[in-house]
Length: 100
Image (cartoon, rainbow, N blue to C red):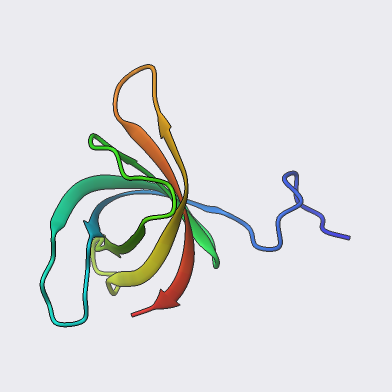
C-alpha cells in the first residue's frame, strides 16, 4: 500500500520554475507555438503547469524547464487535464510520455 496522502505511485515535487510548453513540436525542429508557463510540480510521470493560453486536453506537447544550475528538463507529454482558473490563466495536468 502507498504511504503518501494522495495515494500516488510517485511523490510530487513542488518546483515553481519557469517553463516552456511547446505545442505542435515535431522532430524536424519546427514548433507551431511556444508558450511561457510556470511548472507548479513535477513527478516521475507527470507535471502540473500554469499558463495564460489554453491547451486542449489530449494535445501532445513538449515541456522544457530550466532552473538555475540544474540540468534542463525536457520531455514529451500528453495533456490529460486543462482547466481554466477563476483567477486567470489555465492549469494543465500532463502525463510524461518520453524524456528527451
